[in-house]
Image (cartoon, rainbow over all chains, first blue to last red; front, top):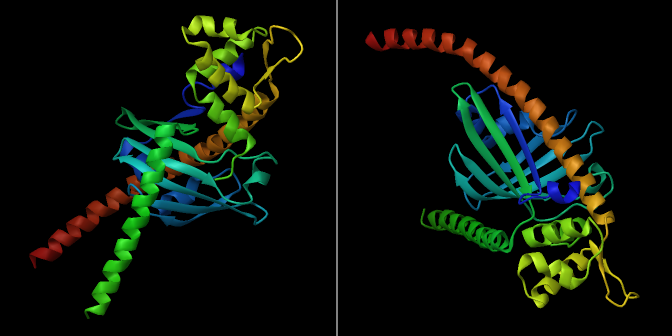
Amino acid sequence: MTAVEMANENVIEIIREFDAPRDLLWDVWTESKHVEKWFGPKGFDTRVDELDFRVGGKSHYVMVGPDGKEYPGKAIFLEISPKDRIVSTDEFGDGFEEVGGGVDLPQGMILTALFDVVSEKKSKLTVRVAHPTPEDKKKHEAMGVVGGWKSSFEKMDEYLAELQK
Amino acid sequence: MRTDHLSSTFAALADPTRRAILAKLASGEASVGEIAKPFKMSLPAVSKHLKVLSKAGLVKRSRTAQWRPVALQAAPLKEALDWIDRYRDFWEQSFDRLDEYLKELQAQEAGGKKELKENGKAKARGKKK
């Protein structure tokens, strides 16, 4: 049966080759000024509000539809292996149900992006979206906590520096 | 975290044994014993998997027949597939745009490199003075 065959280890897998070197593909995927240029369906404009590209860091983006409606999304980076692999959470904000055609949206999905060199001027991108395994969930929670603490420490650092001025 | 329909479907599908159970049931209903056979698994272990599948609405156990067969329920699978299709569309469209953007960038870069080279020469000359 198709459904069961399709739902292999990873629920969704999308593979595409691009006529660009792998390093450029990586930059375009990870830098907000680039992401805004291509992310989202045709006719949508994407605004990246936050892209803290490090493990435990968050990204926050808003897709603006042709009608001006805003569809927010967010992610937390779980694994970053430079030029090679990024694992992040993938959450939809309020309002996405309509984009999805009125269905419930799965929550707490994990997105894995793999970057492969095909040739000097060609690269392959694999995007997998899966529901987290219990291990993913644990990792996710741990990362969220670590990320939260990190930013608290950073704030504290700034505050301490200010106090000592 | 909100638990929704699709999440429980995908969570149920995230296990190879459960997918194998569904694949078996796709060819017709079966008893728990029949389901357990190919997996070399204890009946309680299989029952556990069936419980997850049944909670997600993917299987139903007959209450009437004496051997209480388990049957596949396709509706949630259809819903999950529809969502996958839409999600795939989303990425395909993003990738189309990415493709064009990468071409644009590289065209710019090819043009820019010449300029950079010339600028570099100018800078080098500037430093010497």
